[in-house]
Image 1: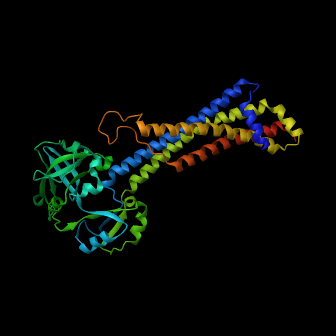
Image 2 (image 1 turned 135 degrees about the vertical axis):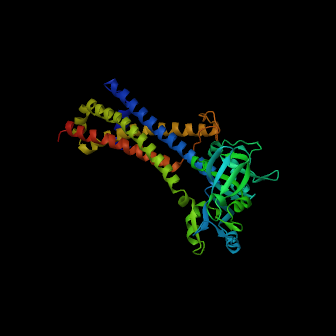
Image 3 (image 1 turned 90 degrees about the vertical axis):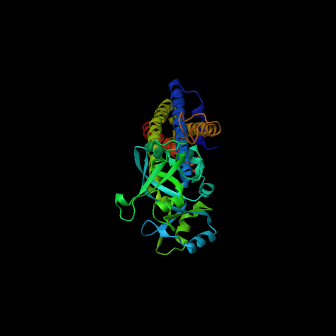
Length: 397
């Protein structure tokens, strides 16, 4: 065992002349442990929420979307569909007719995005997983059915199981009120994903949507799901399409959402890192008092031939050991709490209509490794400056 590590270990666990040094050392370990555990738990909860929202909004954020390069609609291209169907990287695809319309229910009116899909849509995209009331259907009892976002349902005061339909209006060719086309749908389900989607989307059958939009035989986009979502960029760059169409992946279509998620995590990380930095000042106090307590030993080490840098390394190692002890305890506690939350749902979301009953968590091991390195670097930096100053002061040349 190297000499600085051996001496640092003895200093860490042996009694000190001043009992307050032991107390401050324990406080230092506890502060680092709490900060490390908080970083692991909070970032894991953010990862869980992000994953939940991403999965819940999967019906509205396909891996790749093919849409007309100009205009809202394009004629159905059977040759293009055959190319997509033959592509080995494609798991499945959905033809969609989508545009903005006006929805009215009684005296309540709100703009909505009407998304027309086929009957097999739920089987592939599993919109039912996001439905909090009712069920998925585009036709029911020989009537046009619709699934409303929870925000749309709230704005329209629409309820399930009533005979009162939601009327959809869409401007005709002239764009005047006199040329509005309209149709009626009956709410059979309410879904909840992300707030900006819940407040805008109404999902119904593609035949009704085409009729409402005066776009018979046309589509507004083709939503493509890949066997390996990691190939989104490669697929977008290599799949052959002419200048009539454009390919976009989900990061292109939801750039603001993913930027917001990254920004939120960064802000939370910086806030908790600041708290961890404040806690690391206990290491400064602990190391400083230890050097003062052991200043008589420094002369002995110097007389035995140890260089000033080697003596300073004893206390740097001491600071790293305090940091590592706290970090190990914090990571163990944080990871244990995350596993318990994932397994037993210790902390619930409370009353209300949610996709899950408890806070979701997902441990990202690369983030845990990054947090560990940051914590160790913080402890090393906290112990470096007092060690450098005090060893120069007490070790005579």
